Image (tube, rainbow, N blue to C red; front, side):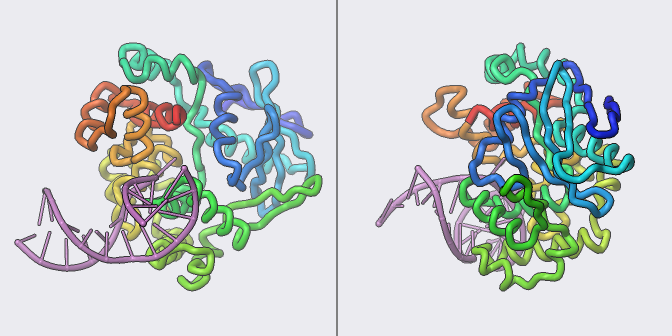
Length: 300
DNA sequence: ATCCAGGAACTGT
DNA sequence: ACAGTTCATGGA
């Protein structure tokens, strides 16, 4: 992590292939998004560090992030944690040069990497958030998925007001672990999604699944196994979490409908590719399947 | 109305 | 292992 602590604010120095505006465009894809707010070329995000709610105002000037704190003055330790979170949020540990080299040899990706050069996978560093969000979004359209998330966060998350507007924190696994299925049914979760998410919250709150331990595992298939052994987490959700939370560039949600639609568009097909056809295309993206998928999503 | 959406578990073979 | 079925609801 490349950053500097300027006490009242912090700076982060991104790696070479990086485009802040393009990342913000992705963050701004749904008007129902509630976990951050994009205003022009700035994004506001609420974080919890050292048990304190801390609003961050993130801008980009002269090739570096400038992170200010419009509300509470942060402690020294907190500032470092904020830097860590943002570094991870924008997936800045990746060196994309190899991906771009590979993409220029690929008929599907060539245009996309040119168009979106510097776009990073926008990550979801919290394991409970990424998994429960993926479960919420299973088999429903994105708009409704965001609606469910909004209700969920507004019901069970904490918030902080700044200039008349609320900034929300995703609910903790500990909070959700205490709920009953009926609680989530009132938000129009299905019985199954409600049960999966509460069960998952209990698992995470009791240390039955730990991000740091998953990060230690080298073999992708072993990570998949650890994740899919939990109810509600199938292959799609496992690969989604590996890509958005565990920073595995090899993760590849081959059954994803959005991915299929993007491929259909890019190739001008009259139907969506099958899972087998999608796998075959992925053969050209070895090592960077997650980035290929994310760039394709971004094209939608 | 009708189709299907950023799937997964369960059932039967 | 593999295919078919069920879940449940809103968007387009």
